[in-house]
Image (cartoon, rainbow, N blue to C red):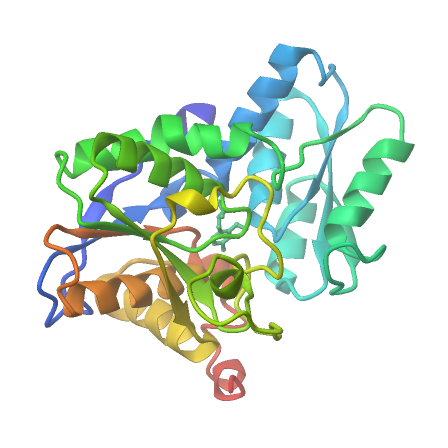
Length: 314
Ligand code: PMP
């Protein structure tokens, strides 16, 4: 299984990109064995923790996750002989809980509470790891192995696949690991590459990064990206601009990627592609725009791909 992580395809959009002045290319991270970009950091975090001696045979990995990192870590746990406990906010889909349990993880559901609140999923995970013997906090929001693996693998793959010609790179941010690591690498190779954050409406990141008014933030249905604070592993200096995308546009684009492009992806891929299309249509860059397809559709069938559920999205 571990050999299947990374080296994902990069393909050009053909139909939803009609009218674009430059090609829009998508990095198919949903084709990783666990179905998301997070398999990369799961392996990198376990490798680093084994290397430093912080993780010992038979330990339990503890992670605060929107679901995808949990799946990646569950694969690593079974591959290397660890147990896994995932702490997940209640807003995440039923499919994600069921998948994690099927993969052998213990799942603790927390209320949707803001960072710092004792009920917040990250705070609960930290507390469990501190209190229990043999529990190791994988800590994707702070672990430097997260952005590093994107700088060392995702970024170089994209650069190679584009043969060194990229106008802009677009991704959403949950931990910010992907955009930070890939952005750093691409800018080192060519400082003209524009790194653009695709942020859900309701997230405060756009304002916190100085790319728009500082808002109170609000609730949104999209899972896995956006934040009310700048995550520790995110490097704001690599981000040149932000495109704000609302739930309906993200979900509609995810459905079009499925039905028109045959790319079986989830909501945050819709966010990234919607943002990438704006840049490509307006001709704001003169090279291809690359967007990340972060995870697969299977986690959202009862939501984004359910007509009755979609009809209730504002
Ligand atoms: N899309 C989805 C669905 C995710 O779960 C995540 C991570 N939470 C991301 C995108 C963003 O990845 P990163 O944590 O590297 O910013």
